[in-house]
Structures are given as C-alpha cells and as structure tokens.
Image (cartoon, rainbow, N blue to C red; front, side, top):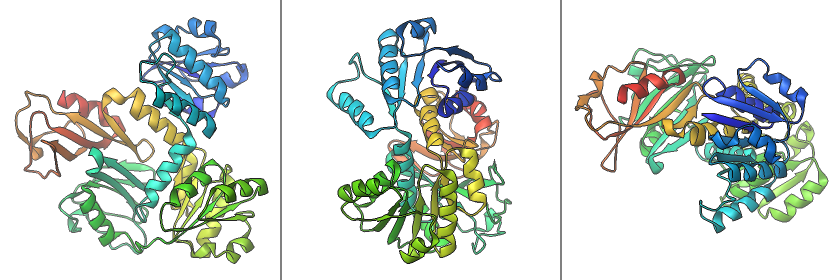
Length: 445
C-alpha cells in the first residue's frame, strides 16, 4: 500500500514508524531538519509543502492509497486533503486540533453523500478519541481497558491483579469464572502471553477477558470491583479533553469538579458547563487538593497538556486517597512508565489516533477490530470459508497460539468450548499476539 504522510512532526513520526516496514511510505514536510529523523527508516522523504498541487503530483498522488495530513496547522491539513482528493482516489485522513474545524468538516459530511467531490474520508481529532476512551473506561469500575464488539453483544475487559486480589498466585484452572467468560491474555512486564490452565496470576499482571457483557460484568463484580458506586469525579486540566469529558459526564448523576489554572479558560468553562464545579488553581497545589477534597473522589482524571504535571497530579491525588487515577500522556512508551509508578490507567491521544488509522483504514481489509496492550495483541474478525468442514475447536490445530473467543452464527453469539464445532460461514473473533496475525489469517483462508 502506498501511503503519503504530510507532516514530519511527532504524530507523523509515530505513523511512519508504525507502517514503514509493510508499506511504501513518503513523508512530506517543508522543514528539512524535521525530515532528518526518518533517515534510519526505509522510506522516502520530500522537503516541500504538500498543499501545493505540483508537489502532490510529483509524489505520484494518483497512485496513492492513503493520504494522511497531520501537520500542526489544521487549515493546511484540510487544503492538502482536498487537493489529494481531487487528484486521486486515495482515502484521505485529516488531523485537526480545533473543535471548530472538526465541526465544519462534519457538517460537510452530513450535508453531502460520499460521492461529493470535496469529501474528506476521515477527520481525526486525537483529543476526542482520548475523551471517548476515558469515558469508556470510567463506565466500568477498576477496568484498565474496555472494548465492545458485535454491536455490543461481546466485550473485552482488562483488569490489573492487585495485592489484595483473590486471584493472586492462583492457576487459571482453579478460578471459577463464568462459563461465558474467557481469559484470552495476560500482560506481564510489558510482555503478553496467551494462558493455559496452568498459568498463574501474579501481582501487577493485567488479565484480559472476553465474553458476553452480562458474564463479564458478573466476573468483574465477583473478582475485581471493590466499589461499584462511583459518585465523585475530579478533572485536572480544562483544555479540550477536560471540557469534553466534563460536558459528557454532566449527562450522568456524578458530581464533577474541574481544576484549571488559566482564569480566562475558567470563565469559558463556567459559562458552558452547567453542572460542573469549576475551580481556578494549580492541580499540583497540595493545599488546594486537600481543601477541595480531591482525595475523596472515586476517579481523578489528569488531562493537562504537560506529562510531568499530569504525573505529579496523579500521584498527589493518589496519595490523598483517590481510588483511581486516569492520566493523559504524550506517547505510549511514557504510559508504561506512568503505570509502573502508580498511575492506574495512562492513555495517549497519539496512540489512540494511530490505532484508529490502523484498524479502520490501513488494515481494515485484514479484519483487525482492535489493538490491545499497546500493540502486543490484536482482535481479528475472520469469516470461515464455505468449504470448511465442521471441526471441533479442540481439534483445529492452529499454527500459532490464539483464542477463538466469540463465534457469530445465525445472528447469535456463542462463547466456544473445546467441543464446540467451527462451521462454514461462521464469523470468528480471535485474540492473538500481533506477530501471529498473518499465520492465523492464512489458516482460515
């Protein structure tokens, strides 16, 4: 696949590093120094402005499959995508940082069908993706990741094994999980493995479950959730993410406090948030946190635009007694470090954006529904071929370790066991490590 990336900034670097091994990549940016970081990657660079029609022609845009504009200038990204759309049939991905730009492009989408000449295929506002991910995690107490499949009829939950967990040091075969609950993976020390009955849960492990929503909710209530009654949420940082979070949470019965340092921003927040208590102050001020009772909140969410401040705020609120901390970080590598020092959940908007591109655009044909544990594992959706003979799950002899977690058949969801038959035309949701995806796909071709 030929991919043109306009923007040699941090976002462009992450995207290029993710896809250059399997795809033909061209990175375009007018700053030659910014392009130097790509010298060790097997890709092509052009020092130019991709909003120039002649530059795009020189980059052979007509034969491009995906055009991604991710510079720090929204308007430049929009212009470049519109030109690319005129010159080619490439799918266009436009990054924006301002809500106004996203809303304008959404209005075009709503007013015209997909055949409209100036239609941009995908508009990505990373902060909005981050907001959605945080909201999804908040809805499931104590979970560190939540995913939904099959129109909500199947679910993935990820929980950390804590010191007081009744699963600590127990073998999987000794754990009385619901029969519609499968343990598909265990992440330990930044590695992931697919467990068997002899696998033991250790402190700090992240256990990944798949199954029906009801079964997983029962499992969560039995083994993980210490207190299901979330009443108070504190948000530190009133930027785009903090504002969108508070606005969304106002539709619930939760009590929300939001701390923002900039006074003018506080005025905006106070005028536009009706049920949120907006406080002007520094989220790293221990006296302020104690005075406002932030330590008694059920969830503290730190979403300023500064990683160091987010980490400090998270650790302070945790020390004061906050039950759970969710923190914004710039990169996935930083997220792992944050979780090691005590942050419950660390999420990167850039990682969320790359996963969106990977799962919905670049590898949508590959049937990848979700990326788990920062790229260590993936959820595949594969349809069994028509001439496939009825075969018991236990006799499949898959070429690599994988878990067939969900079978969709005739509009029904089946959580398979060893004797369950895999039949022609079944739709399978399969959990496997990322390096095994190709082998699993080949097996079912």
